[in-house]
Length: 128
Image (cartoon, rainbow, N blue to C red; front, side, top):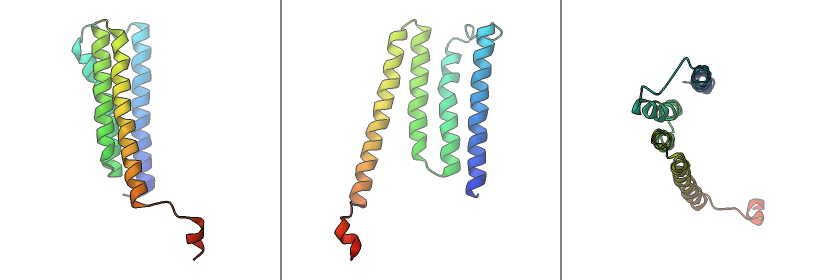
């Protein structure tokens, strides 16, 4: 699959989830859509949205490390909604921060691996 087609699919998936999110927020504010009867179903829905989005992108780009980020973000959203259901709103942000820190550590580790594989070249070496 060529790059333009992959980009179009990724943009399409992203636009779909943005429209889905905006629609659900508007319907919730208007009182048409309520999540109160779903209980834990709400947490599963909010946890699966980022997981599905990142999984689709990972598969299309054949960049499977994004799956880990999607899973971490999905777990964080799931736990955030779970804490909100139990009126522990203060603790919801902790899961997002913890998963974000894990992602940052992964990024730093990958950067260090990259720098070891491709060390910085001195200016004098480039003239030879």
